[in-house]
Image (tube, rainbow, N blue to C red; front, side, top):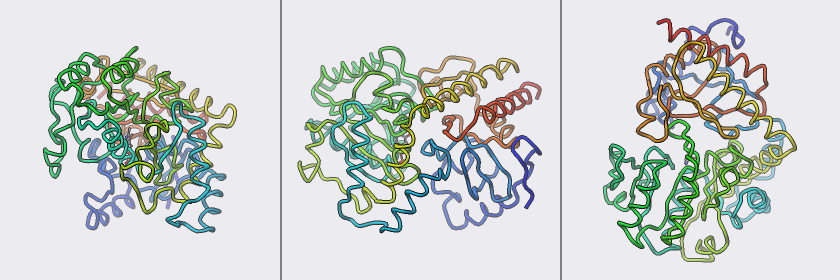
Length: 441
Ligand SMILES: *Cc1c(COP(=O)(O)O)cnc(C)c1O
């Protein structure tokens, strides 16, 4: 195996990844266990990871990359952080699953309650999908209503009732996005465009006393990064309160990332139920839904709303989550990730301007993104007008220079505590070169 350094020799071929992918495709649908990993958004062979440390990972062919995907967000401290690794090993030595309560779960809940505004109680689950699904069940149980409102382009995991987007920007009944989701499963799901309070109000008045909850990514991160406009989140808070519906912030991505207290702290708007995932599990399958006791008391065994899980609150996962939050909240550490995120996103903006390539950038806390799009992006319709072919070429320009960004235009750029200012500056240089190739083609 030859080893190339990031920004040194260009990476031209990935024979070991290609071979591994070929074998994987025989045994796993599309060779992947989550579709976006297959590189359909950008073309080419997915890079097979061999190992990772800090801000870097090494692929099967021995090439090194700077990682700006970070497992789609969770690895906010960087890969294989020594203290998290120690905590995980120690937990594993003491038994990996009990199906009985442990103090480690309470200790993680304590940290979540301390950080996230409005949260008094926490239920731990194993994935973001499970968290949002359970949060909606809870909202329905607490209100005795069935309908929910979501926003086009917001992703809340793959539960049937949430696999819906809007048709052509008009608020409408949701039709399933995927075969296998019966129309009945989404019949109570209403869809509005992101950043459109008037559409939300129209739905709430068309279905009086029928809407259990509005679920929103408070800062959208699954259609690329789209910021809420001034007053949007406060408006949702006001409309839900007025109409007796609950407000759910899906903070699976934004939690502990746009601020230590998530988007609730970032925006000053407190939701009724918050879902958490990604960072909170420190790289393990762990997620949560949480809220005030007055709502959480509907959850069994206190209340009648059933939800459970064999591996929920898993001791290894909770150890990773606790260690991650403890390190993340050390003085100055989070602010440094935010500063690096700003440095990178501003640098990408300048690099594009320098190459005369029109892009849109967005940043909030340690979350950032860019669209290959000449026009402002305020909702999914706008996001979909981005130049996907240009994104694919920028992606491959970066990849061959040892910079790994998401293999899709509709994802974000994530930084970690392990990235350095030098890493970021080298990355901006790689962006400049990739944008220049685009402009001169
Ligand atoms: C990733 C994500 C989910 C789904 O989480 P999984 O752990 O992949 O099931 C839900 N909501 C948001 C906002 C996410 O970013």
